[in-house]
View 1 (cartoon, one colour):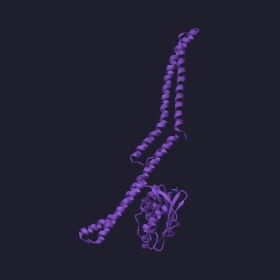
View 2 (cartoon, rainbow, N blue to C red):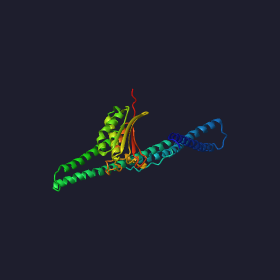
View 3 (tube, rainbow, N blue to C red):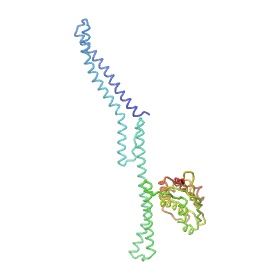
View 4 (tube, rainbow, N blue to C red):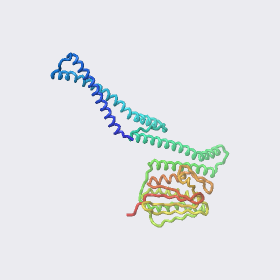
Amino acid sequence: MTTVRTRLLASHLTVAAVGVAALVVVGAVVANVSVNRHMGAEHGAMMGGSSARDLLAAALPAALGWGAAAGLAAAAAAALVMSRRIAVPLTAIREATRAIAGGDYSRRVPHPPEEELAALAADVDALATRLADGEARRTRLIDEVAHEMRTPLTTIRGTMEALIDGVEEPSEEAYERVAGEAARLARLAEDLSTLSRAEESTLTLRRGPEDLAALARAAADRLRPQFEHAGVTLDVRTTVAVPVQADRDRIMQVLVNLIGNALAHTPAGGRVVVTAEARGDDAVVEVADDGAGIEAADLERVFDRFYRRPRPDGTAGRGIGLTIARSLARAHGGDVVARSPGAGSGATFSVTLPSVMPA
């Protein structure tokens, strides 16, 4: 594959060669015609030194003039041809970028033979692909949010209409139903805001020195009453401090989401084990359960927005907790991954953050 630099050098040399060739050829032809004309005027007389000089002086200006004019014309024609070979792919790239800016993300650029222009065309194609993916995600998110809002809004509307029409008597149960659905909408809005800012790297993190093991214990203690109510054993195994630089509230949100997710997919009589430790340059918290497990094909899908796994009690969550957990961990320079031997064999979610070694 050639480069633009090589192409430009070759085009300049080609233009120069064409110009010189035209100058030589046309100059020689004009000089020959001029000499023959003057010799004819001399009627074949013996040519002396002064006559030869006069003849050369008379022929040279015309030869150079016509040769230069022909050389310039030929060089201009060659330059036009060579420049078109570079201008055509640039024009195609410009037209493609205009189409992409106008929303036509399916537009692609033909790759020219020049290495730099081919790389530029590939970058434009990659940009179009990223924009198309972003637009698809935006559309899908709008549909998903609309679907998530429809149920609580329908419940609120139905309850209020029943109260207004007198079909249902005002009661604490009715008000609690409306308040609960309104709270669900508020949580959904807050979760989506957090997720959006985390994915767009606009989330403000108030980092400070924290002990990840202590945060894991605090998150487990916050959910312990729910474990006791569900009949699930919660075992926290942390013995030494695991220092990190993190936003305490955000990492607590990550851990609460993961421990709560483990509770939701572990039946009564099951066990959830939370461990925290330093592994080389990483600080790791693992939340392992012996519950429903995850099929291999779903190990990444569980982090998709609004993806829901079946729960032992048949209920479904909002399907956004794991997405938020991974996004917040990645905003800290870490990650959340899932492992599972398969359905019915439990699952383990690992939070990995950059470790801070104690001074």
